[in-house]
Image (cartoon, rainbow, N blue to C red; front, side):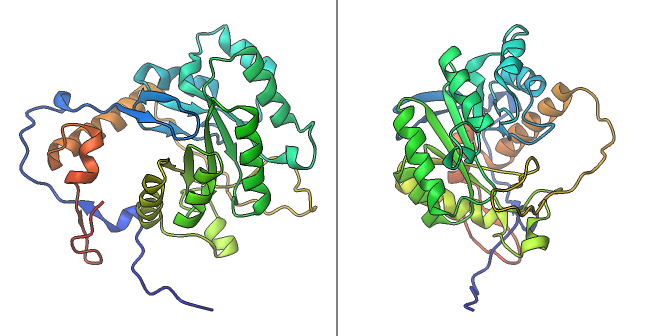
Length: 295
């Protein structure tokens, strides 16, 4: 066994250093960003916060709130075409959502999530994003499946993951992904790290993976968890890498979203970033473990 003695950090290990700012108000901050995607050739402008396809998060109800703030939602891969039809009748905006699939179609071309993906994109071609989601994207068959989806949908923007190392980010982007999901086990309800002993602290994973993505013209979004909860694995084993928790009701999702966005705006005013795009240039972390390491 080889041990990596480099420092690896989680978000709880760092703070951003404040610096002189010319911003007089949080309203002066532009929190939208325009992205150009390497493989689809498409571009999109949105607030770079993406709701994951987890149960209770990647829902049509959440999507309808987030779309009003120009944020994206990756919808659960367990929805079927009838669910999509019902949501369309209730004001869903297709430019702010992604359809999602696992990799069951590698073994069974009639896998439900893959068939739903095909039906959704045929019936609703204005859906521009496809997410290919698995807990472990480190097997060769996953890369081949990304290639397959890229071949089938050359003009769609593909999000794929989960990974935590730069070399795999490069591999996925080179083979068809436009954005890569980063994160194995960092979520508060995820037990991957304790159950398998696998993962990389999320702050360091994001820094290293972002650098790799930028080098090949791709992007990342950090994922809050990586686990599969539905259905048995093809090999007959099942390792549930998450836990069920009960949370106190916090009120309307709209209030939470506005609080998050207000926090991001405040961060930018503290560090002098007029645009969210400028944050990497202006932000430096403050930690006993990471003197002068740039974000």
